[in-house]
Image (cartoon, rainbow, N blue to C red; front, side, top):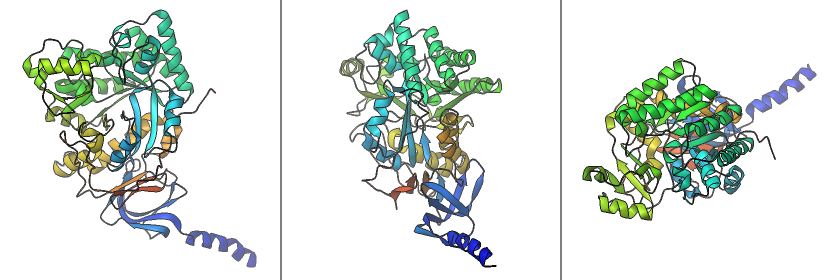
Length: 477
């Protein structure tokens, strides 16, 4: 009997040991299991330790009554380099933010620059555009503006670009980024080569399609641009992710979604994303506008210079194109955007970038809250669970084949990473506008990254940098 008591006593003591943190009586939404119920959630050592109908004890306790507890939001499409911009994403509920569309040329440098300094979990693809820029000596800042945009690569250059892509994957890049619309000099054969390398390493290809943009593109252009990359995926076996189907598709959005659904039905691994705004944004000096020399006045009027808010004319377009900078393009409709957002094929991604007071696009600070306020609460056109799935589980699943750690993100289950967003579903709202883009969203009450409270009671913990790298295995040194 004494031996039995001595064995049971430690188990009893363990059951009474408080967890690091307990969120009490929150409405827990887990898109993986379908759980939607009031629960106690315990956190210990950065992981979800328990989910219980019965009360749990924590050294720190948060009252979640009336609040929604969801997995931390995952943004696969972000271009910011100023780490302070991560503060705006935290206040929008985003715990993991990745630069996967354009990517970077130097994977070790990217991760080294963010180690111990990032507000959010972070990651970047090895990018075809920046690799092309490096090989072809293009002096563009973020996007190619010279030979990497317009010229065919020589056989030697093409081999050098391939080598850079492969080296980036060996060094742990979670994906390969393609701005095909910005590198119109790249042949289809070159794109196929890069897809083939991605397939070799099980990496997804995140693609801004050729022939589509917020500024131009016919229905035939858009269909051809999507067909090109779907064919590349079919030929090589690479995984394909089509970025911002809303701004790539415009009036062709339903048709493009139909093509993606058809490809999926035939076994091609293709996914897509959308953001909830009718205006896009990009660099005015980029190759997208190479043919914008003599457009109609109404075409130039769709463009807004971010720094001043002015709508452009031909003269101011040419002036600012020489100068370079961010231009906002008001050329889509709410109907097209809504079709993209509501499609079961799409996940949510911001296409955001550095948040600067006085200029910018509201998607950088308000994308996820806008989904929850506009499409879930106000329109009731999207269920809360479906919205959470698009923001969490779907992006985690896009990466988890190459990055196994993503199996523990985008879920609320025991053993998963304690990346959590706790918000008031009756109050959450985006505050950023085209005139004032640097505005925190409201309604996010608490955010945890790896078990650490980085937002508490609706306020940032300013000095805490809890972000950790999202990276595939390194196979070379």
